[in-house]
Image 1: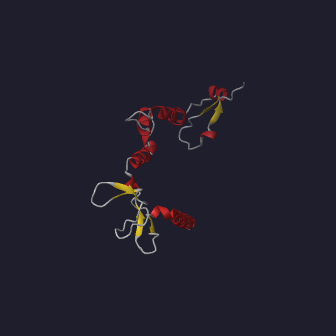
Image 2: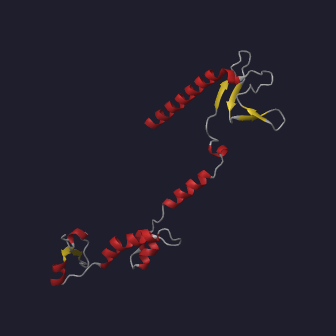
Image 3: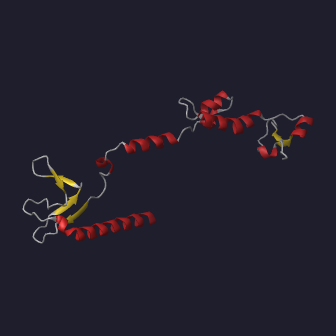
Amino acid sequence: MKLLTFCIDLQDGTDSPATQRAYHVDELKSQSLAIDKKFYLANQIHPVISRLCDPIDGTDAGRIADCLGLDSSGYKVSKQYNSTEEDLVSATQISDEEYFRMCERFSFECPSPSCDTVITMDSPFRGVGSSSSLELALQSCPNPKCSFPIHSSITSIHNKLRLEIRKHIQRYYSVSAE
């Protein structure tokens, strides 16, 4: 295996890119060229040390650059992912009520021909009267004057739900296309 060996020359006072300052090792030895130590510190040493020290609290790219003798102003953008991680953690700690508070609730009219009550599904259960007991939300109409067993018309509710889902999907794609 043959290695291509070259070094980056310092060339004081020039703004030449590293590709124009690259010389073979033999040329570097025979001429009065100097190795650009800051180039190697900034491009090969600093990134590796930054990745290794990243999990350590209190370290950041700017601090590591200072320790290596580099200008730290170019390294001040550190740990941008932390805010995203914190957002994700806090999003998982939010209750379902808070997380979905801005969502449109599924609602439908009572299937009974004699009842016009609009039933909104907030939960699979609901409280019964003043007692602390719960019943299935689709067990009966919440209107005290109507005791229609809603679950007996589950097909019509299912169809209404499908239509609502399609409507929301269509709304999503129409907003995304704009």
